[in-house]
Image (cartoon, rainbow, N blue to C red; front, side, top):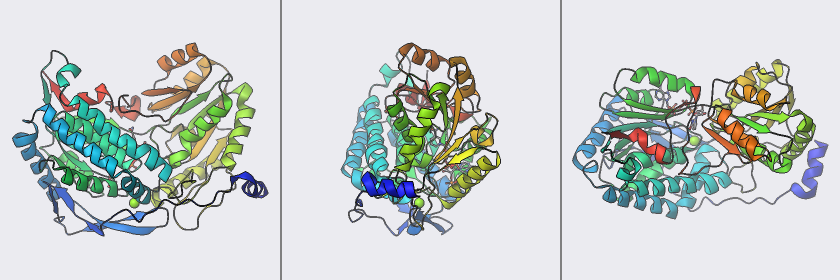
Length: 487
Ligand code: NAP
Ligand code: MG
């Protein structure tokens, strides 16, 4: 405590710098966006979405059931058959470009709403989520009239109606990853946001409406519990794209087996961040912090398992602990905040359970002495040292700001340890040697391997997993493939 106060009394105390909320508009109640209209849910039921930073209710949102999903799929089918699949790629591109530009105009509003609804820091939503979401639409708009170059000498056809289900960690960005390639290739869509973070998708529906998309091309249907399952099981859906947990991904795989539906799954991860002794240590420490603590560890590809070469382990751990002491946990709307609110009470409880498991497994725990708001859901950045490969906290995805540290001596040893997981979404390698980077990128069984950086995204780069992290790729040229039939 004394140490933290000492730090705060010296250089680390910033004046609050709150992003304004006066420029945003959130409705009290949202209906479903189906066939270009706002329609009431057939059950008449609504659920609340809250701000996890202070537990205040932000809005009530419609709870769609099977009947509403059926209505949305019918609207998407009609729009597909009559309008969208018949339109030229150049015409489709105009709509998508317009949407991207209108999102840019409303970037501040989208960022603030994302922060309020999801608990993520304004720095993250303003600088990462929203610009990347816009860029995804710009990028795929560019492909819409060039599909014959993307797939030379093939006849390219859309798949039809896509059902898209997204998680709560990057709500708007995941919506963009799903919608942009589907629309560019001529598919129509029914999109279901996650229960705790529907608001930016609903704001997007307002923008889509204003952009003048033909009715039914994009339908946004909120709900929880069995809403996603109703979409997966609908007989007239041609493709399911899912991002979320591995457990739900497996259920969807079973539900779609033998149905003829195309399926892509972007699932969980337990990614390795590997620091060699010749790495630029200060940058690597920043990379570790960026990889697991920013965005509350709510990142599917979070660098949640740290591997440090033994001869620099003491140095890296000392510097990491020092850096953790300076991290600010608190109001996500404050531009100084490094770690915002955990997305929901349920997720906070899950993380806290894993922290208890880690302690019970005998690992040494380190948490900085940071002040945490009394209301809202918060978790301090947490380090577990002296862990074993077989520990639950090393094997299972925690999806919070919790990092385990292991050491290694040789390249072969760290490759074997890093690959020893059911997942394979991402990895990071920190070293001065290019040859070592090339060696590891070919041997690590992970969809993305970052070298001397972490958690960097670009619409032109494909993203996706190995093993239980799912299959199919989103982003880049690869991201078009799941949405087309080639003849
Ligand atoms: P989740 O519980 O699997 O939920 C994801 C979405 O699926 C939500 O919209 C959810 O609806 C819906 N859903 C739940 N049960 C369903 C069912 N039986 N059939 C169809 N849909 C169903 O995951 P989450 O907790 O929101 O997200 C965290 C997970 O996502 C983590 O494991 C993370 O690693 C993963 N993730 C992966 C990537 C990637 O690209 N690989 C990216 C981001 C996140 P409700 O909201 O109603 O529950
Ligand atoms: Mg919320």
